[in-house]
Image (cartoon, rainbow, N blue to C red; front, side):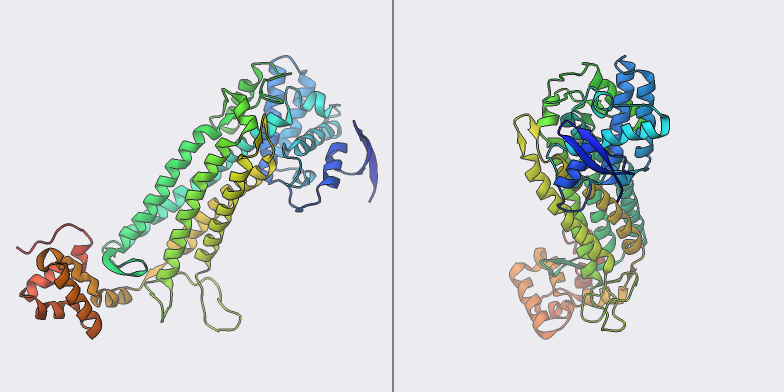
Length: 461
């Protein structure tokens, strides 16, 4: 491989001849051959947006001439649009401040400006003007997370909610056996189950929007430790204003930059709400798997769309692959939240030192959850068919319906009826006719499964 020599404050280093990065990036590449995984594209693109906003602010404040500012802006726009992402190879597991990635961006922007516009820029003096890695990387975390939240996850959530609402309408009036402890319980409707999932997702959306109030607050302008050394006091608010205008997200400057630099409370809060979403996704996925189980020896209440062969050895087998994939996503999100929790505890004095790991895990959870919700909605919920025959068969034989007689015959008599029905394999109605003085018409009314899904107390008038 052809190389060139680049120099930084530590001396010369060999860099691939065609690389846009410089010496500091190359040292990081050499130092951190750990996972082989660079920071997500969404983070790199957000960091480019931050650099663009910083250049705009520096120019507006008269700190950077228009030629250099415009060169930074043009180069940053290329990266923000998805170009040259291969020029950011530094491992996630690097210096905890993310300084290596910040300098990677500074060097790439400098070289891009030189190659495409003929403008000479210094990575530190010009591209990094009024900034420190310590405020720029946390700012980029917030910008990337907010962008994925608003543009990716929330639309996916809305789609899943709408799909569940539509499915609830389709299955309205279909009654089935409820289950608690995975055991037969009082009847419910399929629409009630769909609506439960829908409300869970609606509640998650509200929680995410509350967390969004803090993830849009940016510590840019706090520079090295939060004091704002080497930055105009107007710089941070101006950067937030530029980002809000460009991305159409309500970014604002943090009142206390020390918090945004030394801690990752807002990222942890957002991750916590994503962890709630993971639990909801896991519940929905597992409920679907149980309802689809069988088709002969399971519940077989629904039939999920048949998407692919399910076994390399058992012909004809079809598995609930979408719920399984979603359950794995949920598990991964929970793992991410645990790592982010530890990372957020690592704010040592004036700087958190697990920023790249927090960024990678938070953004991965946002990306995965949005993708998984769309797949779950479109390839599982929207297309499942109801096995009404199986539902009716289980419902008709369910002795737990005797619960409806509690107010009329008492718990003890009800328990005797249920046990007898179980032992003899007979309908609870027949057993109740023998063990109570209630007539058949009254019992049919009291034990009507559809009526029982509305709750309330029995009416024997």
